[in-house]
Image (cartoon, helix red, strand yellow):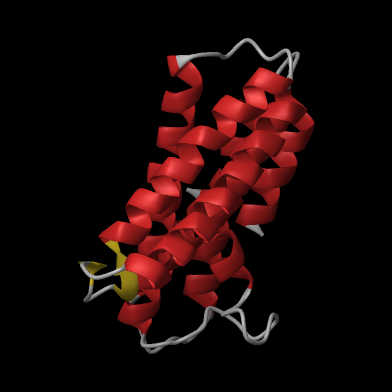
Length: 192
């Protein structure tokens, strides 16, 4: 509920409403913790609820806020989405073809430094190419920096989600997208 309120707040009222919507999570988490019986401590139950709502709600809310930037928000959002997709694809292909050195074997054993570098190259070039096609006021080194920040955030989001899954002892984050690890596995790079 709090994650949905954060996204709706971002869509209807901007950043202040997004944070206000997210704050509903804290109230709901305490109410549900008070009336429910869990095997976990109340502190852990409330903390995980708030973390999940912040991770998903604020992450998706910021994508909505990007879309609403004037005058080129939609183009910037599309560029972010494409950059994450290209970086993930380049990282996968680069890792499969040349991956030898594990990046974080305890968290995500399939990720390699070679894949990271391939993803970084693809992710840095994507905004530069996209911004040279559209009249968006980002050019030159700013486009490369924009791509680099997106790639670093995407990798951090992917590793964070892998770390959470390892901690919880689950292979997939859900069953909705069979064979893809769940919806969260598809958007983990975007929400960071």
